[in-house]
Length: 440
Image (tube, rainbow, N blue to C red; front, top):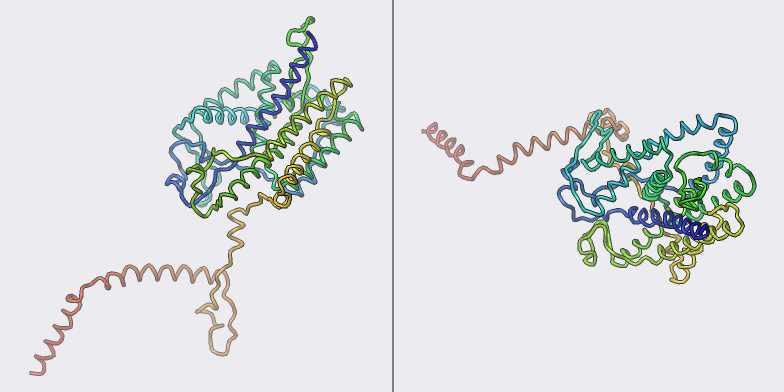
């Protein structure tokens, strides 16, 4: 009976690991851009909520960031070890619980909204909070009654967790954190992903097998940073014992799998000839999101993740000792992508793929600036003076004056051009008659 309960716990842990990766990966797919846009796309203050039009701000992970992941992780981990060692553990956990409670409310509310919208397709009127300073938007919040309802539910659940430390609510918070992280954190290339996985592979081995730091922090850290399930739901002594998996073992491989899914879609769209400056290909039937496409890389990487997780659990079960999951998950995910690329003959495309995109400000800086030869009011234009380019302020003044002149011309020249020939000839006829009378 005890063995059956333990295997059920392993299955539950595996399910809780795969679910946020699968749904978070599909949630990370952006809405396709095209030249055909609805009118509401140009309206900053949209009237109704529409999940297809909503784009969350994402955080890109570059190659440089990937190199620093193990360093930052080590600093944070060792700092927590020292804090727990020399400070009161209860007070530290109170502070950490308050911090994660705030994050948990936001994460649970956002996931709840996505679940309701995804299952019902509901569209509700939006409320806008717009903060502007000197014609610059400082803050723009959009929310509906659904957001408010989910916010209330998440606050109640988070409050219950703070007072009871219930493991079910802790799992809900952990799954919400994992889903949100996989959706919002994006690797810019497979190179960055492989560097990150390789670095955290070494990080996990060192801190688990080389020191007591990882195990000590995991035991003292009382926050929803793991998913757990009891080995026996109804123990004889009434004390629950849990098997667990850290959120890092879900999120880190998860953002790599999400990249694989986006690459699958990229390959499919490339075959269709998709261009964001043109209309959508007919094969998409006008869908900007939610269309089907082959997922060979995502499928192989997901299979490798499941196999690596099963290996981790098996070794842990046999040797009765905690295992660093990334020891098995990192090589499995990397080899799955490389192996699939080799079999499909797409190794160059895999390593050339990048999701780097310039921001609007960077694109504006990259555009060539049109300059006038010289300023007309400057003495540099006088004979014998050497002509030099006008300053930025002078150019701005010129541009304003040109615009004013153009406006005046539109208001005066156009009406003159519209005057009929008969009307324009009347003054001339009158003047001719006056001259004739004068001669007589």
